[in-house]
Amino acid sequence: MGSLNSALTFLWALLGTRVSRLQEARSSRDRGASAVELAIITAVILGIAGIVLAAINIFVTNESAKISGG
Image 1 (cartoon, rainbow, N blue to C red):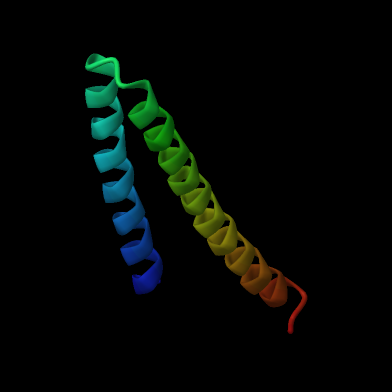
Image 2 (cartoon, rainbow, N blue to C red):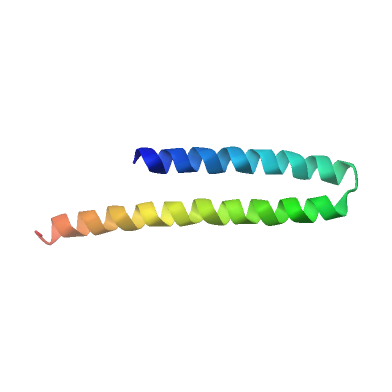
């Protein structure tokens, strides 16, 4: 679980940085930069969702093995 926490921490920090840059780009009316930042933010959110999905899948698999006695 340590590597999962490290990955989530990294992605959370990356998301925070990109959101800050997006806010800065929008305040200066830089549309090109905001589009790039939105694409990166979307990719980071998808990465976080994938990690959470994998963790849930592993948990469910382990618990179902306990229930079925295997």
